[in-house]
Amino acid sequence: MTAPDIQWYPGHIAKAEKQLQDQLQRVDVVLEVRDARIPLATHHPDVERWVGDKAKVLVLNRIDMVPDAALALWTDWFKQRQERAYGVNAQKGKGVKAIAQAAQLAGQAMNERRRQRGMRPRPVRAVVIGFPNVGKSALINRLLRKRVVDSARRPGVTRQLRWVRISDELELLDAPGVLPSQLTDQDAATKLAICDDIGEAAYDNQRVAAAFVERLKEMQGKAPEFVPPGILEQRYGLAVDGFTGEGYVIALGEHRYQNDSERAARQMLRDFRKGRLGNLPLELPVDLP
Image 1: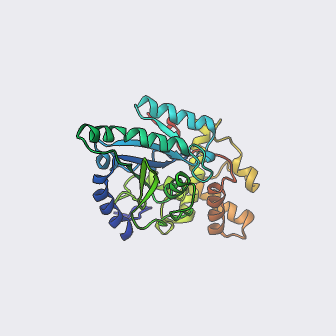
Image 2: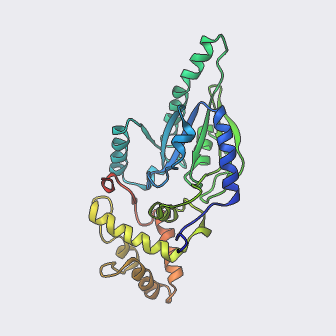
Image 3: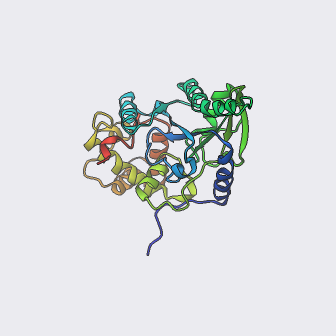
C-alpha cells in the first residue's frame, strides 16, 4: 500500500485543533474562511460537528483571484443550500465591513437570551477558523483596521489562540489553521497544495505542478469562459497541447529553465499564486453532480 501523495499534520496543528474545540464552547458565532479559488477543498470536514447549533458566517476570501462571474456562481450555489457566502479580499479590505455586520447580527440572539434572563448584553464572541493559509489573520487585521495579529502568505504563521477586541459589540478569536488529520481526498489535497493552502513540506512541487496543468486542461473543457485555452502558452511560449501534465513540466524545464524541471514547477506554481496567469478558479459548481 503506497503512502498518500500529499500528507500534512504537524504537531502544532494537532494541538491547535484540541485548543480550538475547547474554545468553541465559549463562542457565539463561527466565521469559516475559505479560499474563493477552491471553496470546496478548503472546507474542513469537521466544521459542521464543531459548529453544532452555533451561528456560522461563510467567508470566501481572495475574490480578487477569481472572475466576478465565478464568484457569482458560487454565491448562487451556496444560496440554494440555504447558506450565504460573503466574498472578501482581506488584503485590500473589500467586503470586510459586511463580515463584521453579519457576525454581530448572528450573535444578537445570544444577547436577547441574556436580556430575557436579566443579564447585561456583552460583546458577541466569534472565532475565525479555516485552513492554514486562507487569510484568517489578514481578515482580522482588516476588521480591526490595524495590524494586531501576524499575517503572511505562508501556512503556520498563527500558532496560538488569542482574543482580539474588534469593537464594543464584537470580539474575535484568531485560531491557527487546522487541517484534517488524514488528507484522504487527494484531489482536494492537491488543490490545497496548488493554492499554497497547505505546508510546502507535504508535497512534491513537480507532481503538484503537473496536477495543476491537468486541472487547467480539465477546467478549459468544462468552463472555457473562466479558464480560457492558451494561458500557459501565453506565459511561457510553450503550448500544452499533446502533453500530459507531467510531460509539460518536463518540457517547460527543457524549454526555459536549462532542463530544470523543479525550477519550472516552482515558477509555474508561483506565477499562479501571484495571479500572473490571470484570475483562475480551480473549482466551479460545474464540477458537481
